[in-house]
Amino acid sequence: MISKKIAITNISGLHIGASGRLVDEAVKYTNTTIHFKYGGDHTGNAKSMLSVLGANVKPGEEIELICDGPEEEKALLDLVELIETNFGEY
Image (tube, rainbow, N blue to C red; front, side, top):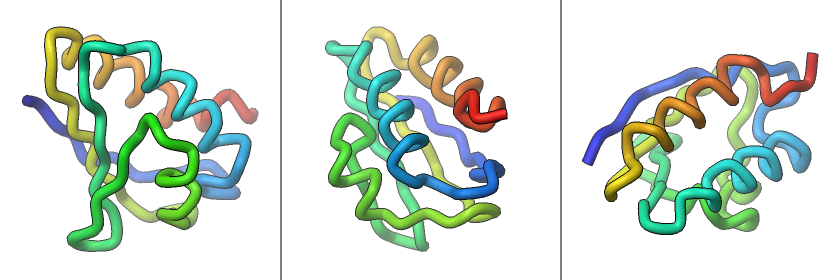
């Protein structure tokens, strides 16, 4: 299991478009569980649109991505890159 804390820096936070791109990336890793911590001690499933949207993460807030499984390193790298590039929004 590996994890990384990262700030959500796009201007709208985890809105429907960004959430969809995050979930689309996470579900590619079928043999790896991918969760995220937010708002202190809350945990969400990064492969669930309802979970990601329900987290209501705002711009500037930090989440911790947690990946566990045979593709954990690749999954974490790809998800971090997606977030760091603002979900391809600009």
